[in-house]
Image 1 (spheres, rainbow, N blue to C red):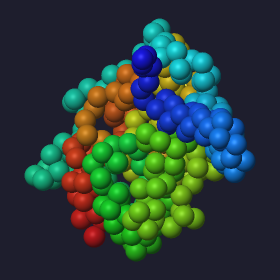
Image 2 (cartoon, rainbow, N blue to C red):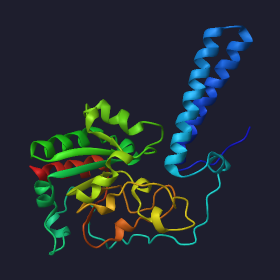
Image 3 (spheres, rainbow, N blue to C red):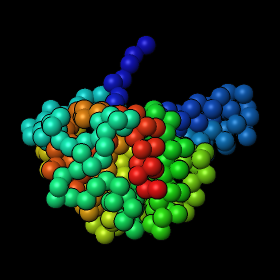
Length: 273
């Protein structure tokens, strides 16, 4: 027996590789028992799994060998770790949004109500909180308010290939409103509002300039280019890569809604109405 250290966005890549190996095992079993159909099906599963693994490795800008070796690169230049003094909605049940918004910026409610171009970025935290139903309600509420609402899906968001797509499909989010990173990344600069639900590493701007860290060079969603960002994460801790997110400490254009995603997203819904 042996174990491989896998963490963060490497998990869906590893799962895809294991799926590929299961197909290879099936094909070998088919050869052993002389079953041509099993050989064919196993070969298809093995080939498709390997192709998906290669696509996700490219999206992560990492080699498969580096992922399977389990080693993490020691950072030479860490991104700044967020300070707890950053303005936030830390306790959704009893905090007034007006008290948590800078005098130079409009209230969270006004930002939500006035936004006409909105992108929602789901992550593994949404899956942990099982908040996809609340996210769908927020999607419907913003759309009913006249906003164009889309979802931005990073290739390795979640813990398995297509994790976010499956969760959103469960609550009947229209497939045409789900956009992959390459299709939506250039639109963030023209977006009024981005709402992040349980995502961290896949939108961390440090991936562009924090050399020597595990996420350096990884393509990320350009969330920081939007006019305003609302982040619904459980806390201010770094993601699985252990790299602090500069968005957490940005003094303008960012609102942190800390706590369980079901509660924070539900609070945002009431602010739109």
